[in-house]
Image (tube, rainbow over all chains, first blue to last red; front, side, top):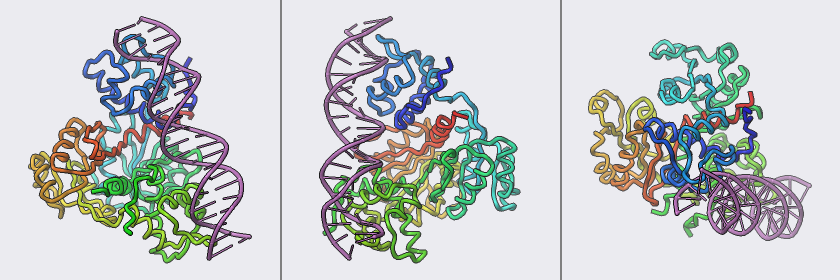
Length: 211
Length: 211
DNA sequence: TAATGTGAATCGTTTCACAGCG
DNA sequence: CGCTGTGAAACGATTCACATTA
């Protein structure tokens, strides 16, 4: 019965479903009971057709006459995509960006517990005030393994990114989000996602060059 | 002669080309003269075929026997994608994340001048130490217009994101990078890109649910 | 009737295979 | 010969059109 979501959901659909899910959380808080695919699409900027197909990858949930029941659709997506599982995460690199991530409430509110922070500068570890436990960088593998941390957020300078990733992977990390512009090599079973601010700016630049 | 890059470069190719460009900058600094598509692919994790096709969208530059000349390919991508144009940017929302972005050196080093910061809290404007000029949020439209700022980086809470975007757009902004989880509506001629940390974590979670 | 769910058509990207050049 | 550049084939995602159902 626990529909072990066969990874047959195309990546773009997955991304949209996550957007839908988070919108549904908000709509539920606002007391909305029901919503149609076109209304969802209007709010999120997707085509209603896409949303319907995305949802249908997870099985049927809608009411043919009158859209989707908000709580039902939300629960459906949540269960199918495993969003109800809480994950432990850590941050490596406690500069401005790393510190910001360390204290980013949105993560906690969405089921991600940041339970460790790392930096190679002992000085930094002593001066930062946070409720998260801090460790020197050479303890990354140990701490990740002992605490069962699954997700690593890398906010170190580019030149230190690969080495950082290696330590995380050695500790048994499952996924990495890399904020540095460096390219990270990882085993196939460790998923890496890059958040590249400069790259995003360049995409804007390129697309806007028609000024 | 200035090859007004017809926007016939597919979006995925564009993203790859930007990665290649930044790698080439690094390789050039390291003194490398020449590189093949397969070597580029190995480093960046792309298929050599893709890289060759991506590059070919911009015209021919390679040497048929021996790969690409680093400086030539770099200049070629730069010119075609308009990466040599410097852009003015601003940051709205000077919490931890916004402050980190305000002082993010990688942006400056890649041709993006952050020339203004905004926050609705006067108190915050007075306590932050930065070399960037700071303004209260109600001056966004004015400052953007007067200074000719093209890119706006939004790091405000979700509930304030749309309103912030409106002010930027009223001031004539050309592109927005939105770090908040909120969905932003903009005119078709204003490009919006979203950087969604929680969403990225959820994509990891979903893909890793096979633990 | 209004909206879902879904095969079929369409569109865009990637991969393949190889001709062409240094 | 090695590697680029590129049509053609394969693949995957989106959009369309409509049968289906409360």
